[in-house]
Length: 386
Image (cartoon, rainbow, N blue to C red; front, side, top):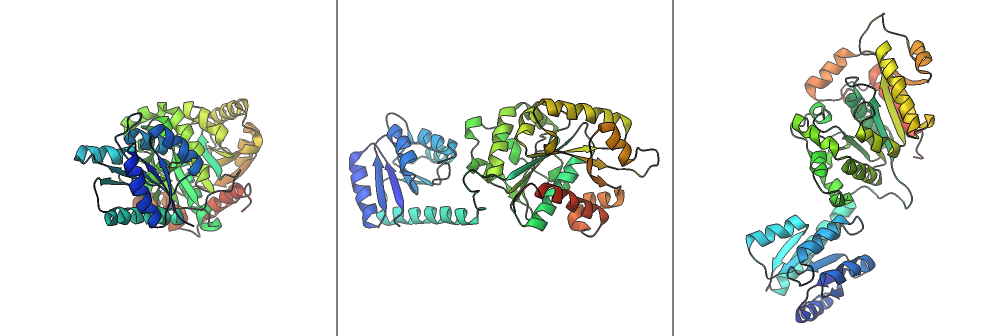
C-alpha cells in the first residue's frame, strides 16, 4: 500500500508542484494550506508522514508540530519541516517543536526524496522494535510498592520483582521510581545520572504523551525498561507535580505488560493520585510495634480511598536477625490481614548487590531471597492472563 504523505503549506504552487512529484514517486498525497486545516486533516487521515512549512499566517509550523506531538494519537507521526527559513535558530526551533528532520527550500527533488525515505525507514524500524501494543480495551498490569514509613527496602523489592517478572514470564516490564530527589533504583543499578522521570515532570501536562514517555525509557541488561528518578535532593520539589505523575502513570500500562512503581511512603499527594490507578498495591511492613501501628492506619486510609482488600498484598520484611521482633503470625493478628510473602534477613546478599550494582535476583538466583522474589512475582502474575 502506498505511503500517505500530508503536505502543509500556504503556497498553492508549492502544494501542486511537490504534490505532483510525490505522486510520481508512488506516494499517496493529501494537502492542507493552513495549520488549522492540517490539524483537522491529520485526525481523519492519519498520514504516514507530514511535510510541514513553517511560515503560515494563521498558525506557524512550529505550533502545528507542538500540537501534533502533544496528542497521543498523532504524537508518533514523522514530521519533516520543509521551509525557506534557513537560519540555525530556525532549525533548532523546528527540532525543539518536534520535527524529525529539517529541509530548506529550494532543494533538489532527489534530496527531498532521500530525506523522506530515511525518516520513513527510521519510523518503521522504531515501530518494529517497540513492544507490541496492547489490544483495544486492554492494558498492562500496574503494581505499586509502598510502606507506612521509609527505609523498609521498597526500591530493592521493586527492582528485583520487575527483573523476576521479565525473567519468568518473558513480557515487557517497566520499572519506575516515583520519588524524585529520593530515587535509589538508578543508584542500585549503577546509573550515576538518571533523570528520565524528572524531565517528564518538568514538562507541561499536555506535553506528556506516549512518545515522550517512551523516549525517556532506558533498557537495562536484565531486559527491564526503566523510568528513573534523580537522587538529587533538589529535585524533591517536583513531588508537587501530581498531575504529571498521574499522566505518566496512565500512559505506562499502555507500553508494558507489567508496570512496577516504587511509590513514596505513607499517603502523600502522589499516592493519593496514583494508588487508585494501580491494579495491585504491595505494602511492606516490618515486625515492630510502631511500624504495625502505622501500617494499620495506612491500610485504613487506603480503604477509604476505595482501594479494596483484593488489591492489597502485605509483605513482611525481616531486615535483622532478632528474637525480639514479632512473629509473622503476630503481625497478621495485629494488622488483621494475611501476609502474602515473608522476606528473611539477607544482609550479606544485600551488601554485595549494592557494592556490585547487581540485584540479588541476578547475582544469586538460587538464593532463598531470590525464591521469595519469585513467589511475590507469582502473586502478581496470577492477576494477568499470560
